[in-house]
Image (cartoon, rainbow, N blue to C red; front, side):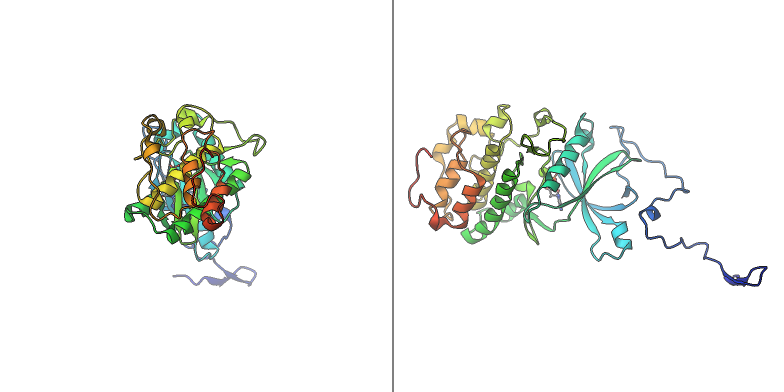
Length: 340
Ligand SMILES: Nc1ncnc2c1ncn2[C@@H]1O[C@H](COP(=O)(O)OP(=O)(O)O)[C@@H](O)[C@H]1O
Ligand SMILES: [Mg+2]
């Protein structure tokens, strides 16, 4: 082995940099090896490259966290954050499913989800970091905070009889707070259901605004996308007007969140997970029972929110929050107003 310290012809000391160690370069470009050819990528039947181990030369995919109708979410390590010494360089990373990505506006839907979520800064709304594109494998993706905890669908599997009042309230109040805030900012979620709500180590988080919409005049530069085309509503939580092709409004979120609250309180979906149109036609609302754990004053609020008719669903997320946060001060204590 030759001595790395030697003299040049002028007699000055020169130190050779070790050949097999890359120079320390704490810039983004350190992760973009330009001289090495990219290994050949496997192409799927959808024309996409298979998920590589590292996206955009920066995010190392570690494992699948969950998948829904549109996307798959992975735990990933942010190599840049790690190189800068971040003790927690982990993120969640969402890509579109290969079968969904073929739809014409698929990446725009993902971008819209990113913008709607970023627009909402609330403790109980998931925080997104960035929207990126890996040009080599032609995938767009979102990076976001990695939530550690349980989605409500998993919580419901563990608690088939529902939650006692105190626990219920600790989830429902922040959830309604997040929803009231989103509606006040002019954003409708469009897909509230247990698998889109996480009880994380840092509290309740509402996420997956992929079917969401901003009201007229809010985020107006976003492309207008018709979600109906994707036929992605979840029948058991989508209000009848959505299943009947009317446009999405905050009242649809109210129906969906009321189904989730009823389910958390009793362990059972109010209408056996049936599409709301079928539940309406079978008059299943007539047989609804008050969940045992629910203080009386919360019931009129919940029952109103569960109305099949959007016109009769005359309650806001803020009013529901108020009913659940301080049931004793709710004006309809002990009686169920009809109609409301
Ligand atoms: N930031 C996150 N941290 C941890 N897990 C997540 C995160 N985002 C989503 N997940 C998991 O991935 C699942 C699917 O994510 P979601 O955004 O709802 O995709 P889709 O639009 O396909 O429904 C969720 O139900 C949850 O289990
Ligand atoms: Mg989802």
